[in-house]
Image (cartoon, rainbow over all chains, first blue to last red; front, side, top):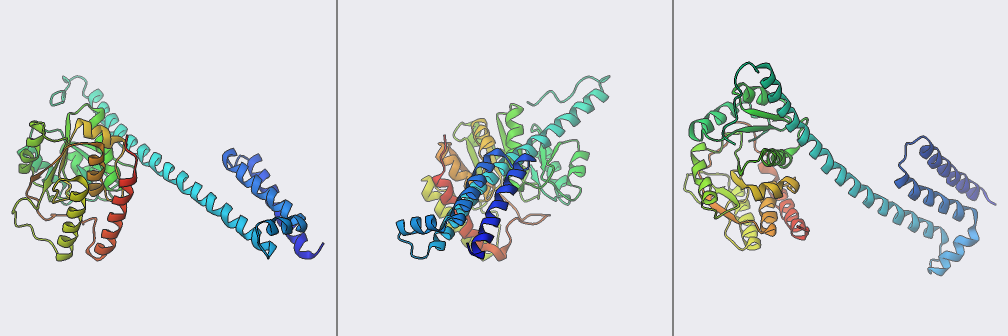
Amino acid sequence: MDIVQVIAIAVSVSIFIIVIELIRRNHLKERYSLVWLAASIILIIFSSSRKLLALISAMFGIYYPPSFLFLLGIVFLLVLLLHFSTVISVLGEKNSRLAQEMGLLKTRLDSLEKKITFKAEPPQDQAGK
Amino acid sequence: MPAYNEEASILRVIQDIRDHFPSGDIIVINDGSHDLTSVRAGSLGVRVADLPYNLGIGGAMQAGFLYAFQEGYDAAIQFDGDGQHHADQINRILKPWISQEADLVVGSRFLSDSGFKSSVQRRIGAKILSFVVSSITGQRITDTTSGFRLYDRKTLEFFRSIYPEDYPEVEALILAHKKGLKIVEVPSEIGPRTGGRSSITIAGAVYYMVKVLLAISVDLMKKID
C-alpha cells in the first residue's frame, strides 16, 4: 500500500465519519444524508481496492483508472447541484409566499386593532366590497 | 398599488385615484421600501400591506392578487405608485371588463397619442417585445410592459398562485394567454414617472431584451393546468 492510497482511504473514511456525525447532530436532513453516505462509501471502496477500480475502468474502456473516479465525482456533483437548484427554487417560492401572507396579515391585524380601539363608534368601511 | 420607494409621488397618486375613482378601495403593497412610502400612504387612511423585505414587482403584485382574491373582490386594478398612470384613465380600462369582453385589460401607451416619448432603444425594445408577444398570443398587443392593468376574478385566482417574478408584465401576458384568459388592450395615457426610478435602466437594454426573450421561451414550456 503506497502513501497515496493511505491518504485516499483516510480522506474517504473521514468524510464518512463527518457525514455520520452531522446526521447524529441533526445538522443534515435524512433526505440528503443518504446521498452523502452512498458517496463516501463508494469513495472508501474505490480507494481501498485499486484492482476493483482498474477492473471497472477497463469495463468502461477508460485507460487511466483514476479518471474514472473523477468522472464519478463530477457526475455526483452535477446531480447534487441540480437537486440543490430545485430545492432553492421551491424554498424561494415558499419564502416569498410567506412574506406576502405576512404583509397581508399585518394589514388585517392593523385594521382589526383600529376597529377594537374605536369600538364605541359604529363600524365603518363595510361598503364598497 | 405596488410601491417601492415612492415617497415622492405616493400621496399625489392616491389623491388622484380618490378624485377620479372614489368608489375604488385602495391597497398599497409596500415592497420593502426604505423610505416613507408606507407612512405617507397610511397617513391618507388607505390600507397598506408592508412586505417584510423587497420581493420585486412580481412578488408585490402577487401579494395584491392574494389580497383582492381573499377579500372577495370581482376585479382589481394595478396602478403604479410612481405617478406615471392617471386615474382619469381608469374608466377606459374598466369598459372591456364591464362589457365582459376581457379577463385581463391592459392599458397601452402606444394606442393613444399622448405624446409620450421615450428613448430610442426603449422604443425599439418595446416594438420587438410587442411583435414577439403578439405572435405568440395571436392578437395585437402593443404595450407589453404596461403596468396599468385590470384583472377580473378569474385572472386574480390564476395569478394568485402563478405569477412570474423576473419580467412579470411581459410574462404574465404569455401565461394568461396559455391559461385561455381573454386579453384586451385599451388606449391609455401614461405619462413619464414623476418620482422614483425605473426598474429598467437604459444601459442594460440589450441584456434585458435577451433575458426577457429567454424568460418568454421558458414560460412557453411551462405546464399550466
